[in-house]
Image (cartoon, rainbow over all chains, first blue to last red; front, side, top):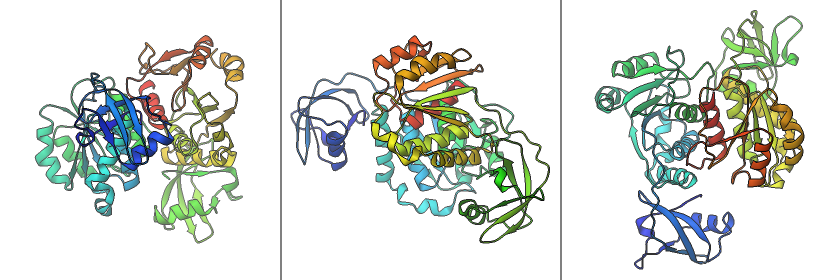
Length: 237
Length: 237
């Protein structure tokens, strides 16, 4: 927790902030070993960041005096990540990694090799997803919450949604055996599609290319989804 | 397990291979759903890779007929990774990530902000480290085992070992606030030093720079060690 992310609910009438949830209170006590008078980095969800003084800390609450918050959050990556839904534990870690790296648009997609049971996981509940996004923002000192969209049908996504997304973005599909190596140092808006463990099937690749995506590869090694996504984002941008 | 990594002990007198350990047998049955006659990718530790036919699978053993193995393992990254010892669970995952990415030389280093208790972790036993390296190789379809060295003293490493390592390598230290952005598309031999959660202390950075390393940064975001190491390797090489 390199930043304490304050929601509008945390802001008090006098312009300070009070947090009451056990996770953040425990972190303040056990990791920061925070004591009143200490100054910590805070940020308003989807807003500015700055320093705040801890004015009180007890078992139930921590209170902060907020100086004017004037620092902008770090730049976002210019990417819409389309990710075949990973298994639940991998999803949790991947959401944290990509949020920390600055991804702001994430679509979780069904594909042939995604196990249908993954769509029943409690990790897909809005609160659980939000928890992982918050952990990623707190880690990276960012305040801007990513948007996560669930796309439970491949064909409707590829045929009806993807062409619109590609009107203002370059589409890239990471897939072994493609001719083009992953581009580097990209600055223009990009859509990055990443398949499941086991990859997209040929028919899916054809649909993604038909919609306007370019295929590219990250080399001969087969990587786990969470490693591949981090490596792709770091190489691309 | 995208490759079955065979050790010399697994090779039988008739030139085939037999594996007996529960982990790989379970994986063959439950993930590959393998049946005799099926062809799978195998590799000899530190040697060649190719396809092998599963000739028998029962509760205690799996036997393979090996065709001549003629495929070379994928290229390694030209990097010696010097990593401040992470906490044990992070170490386990990071060893798997970097092995899958192709790192072949790893030094785990003590620094001021590494908790001393981490050096007592059973994760540092040779067998446990080897297990994570094998998982990384099996994932990426590689056979070449990385070398892991434990460096329990920062000063002896920085003063006595590092200068020798830098006679044939460019040294890079990833550290927030450095002037140079992380280079891209590097092909020459490189030593990459990555600090612990909380970073190197100033004195350590001074020693690393004095030994000939260049400082560089990965941007304004604070990343967890496992995310940062993967991102650095993917951007550098």
